[in-house]
Image (tube, rainbow, N blue to C red; front, side, top):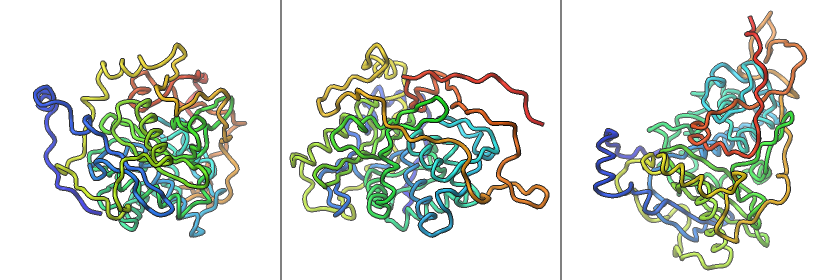
Length: 397
């Protein structure tokens, strides 16, 4: 892992003054993007591929990769338990909202992390794999170094913003390729259109799934500093392409840009990158400092502009024919608690026995925690379904 030259953060009022005087941050002019063929590593198009960027929830792709490596090594199975700890419960949204002590399988945890982008379950999954969040993050960085992600550093398994957590479009492409080639048998996780539990159906934030010809993955990400990120894959005629798009200003823009780049790649009209592969993408970051799009994407004006692009039902209206309308319910994978076998690495020892959860009365379906409007915008929670709030219960003793 190569640590970039870092500069002291500019105070907010100075940054605002510079914004007025000299224009938008570097990312607002041309966001990083890269299109490649995972089978060969051939890059079809790239722009600003080495600019440092906050990965946001694209981080969860590495979380999944490390979990897949543990499964491959035989350390865990898909039915191994993931226990929600107090540390996991304390993680900000988006999240599943299960109480401490809840237990699920690795399989269900992966679906919640990839589709729901559940931060609490990302932490719980990491703890189940490595014993602690810190140990899991160390594995993430070890894998990044092994894969050749030379300008990437992880500090958490979920992607909530931290100035020390950064990556590049090129490095994310390396990770996406590793997922596609090392774990082709796990590809279905990234193609899931929705998850359901109880009476709830939660669609994927990847708006290409079920709407773009051949779409079959992978993951979205958003924090204010990163803007709207997306790694999208599609397969046509047996050929798979992957687009990495970072720093767009809305869900709509990232979906449309990804669709355009993928379509150009398939029909041969993408601007040529020359004879390069992922290992030799030219360029360097201009200033060695991760981009910060907070003055661009998280103002009241920017939020209003994003809502102006929706119909009366709150659905995004696309300006391209490449993204169709989903005229059916998204195909959902059912998830929930229970079904695990064995004791997790975070199990409680009680009476000399390892248990993953305290005995409780007959369980009832849990609901996702209700987010405020500010959290919905900040953490990319999309409207379109009602989230009932269960009646409060007395705290357990």
